Amino acid sequence: IFNAVISITNVEDAAKSTKLLAATTLRNVLGTKTLHEILAERDKIDTVIQTSLDEATDPWGVKVERVEVKDVRLPVALQKAMAAEAEASRDARAKIIAA
Image 1 (tube, rainbow, N blue to C red):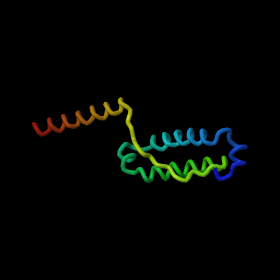
Image 2: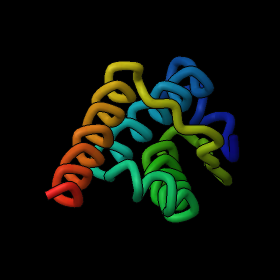
Image 3: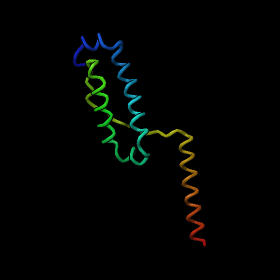
Image 4: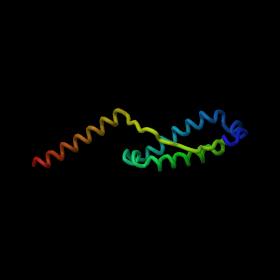
């Protein structure tokens, strides 16, 4: 918090609001990326999220200095879908080779 007066007067709970905004921003940014981009471009994603959060929290008297995406966990349904797609791709290649 770089300005406590602004933080107290402009937002009810700066820490909670910043955390909720971070989660929303993370979902929005990652929703525009492919899995490969997410895994390969973490530094760029971190910078985009940090810049967005810092701009949004400035009126609250909050400065976001650093953001880091530590881990990427896929939902089980998505993992199963990706595994099925990979298996179908292998089967297709095997059929081509066998032909």
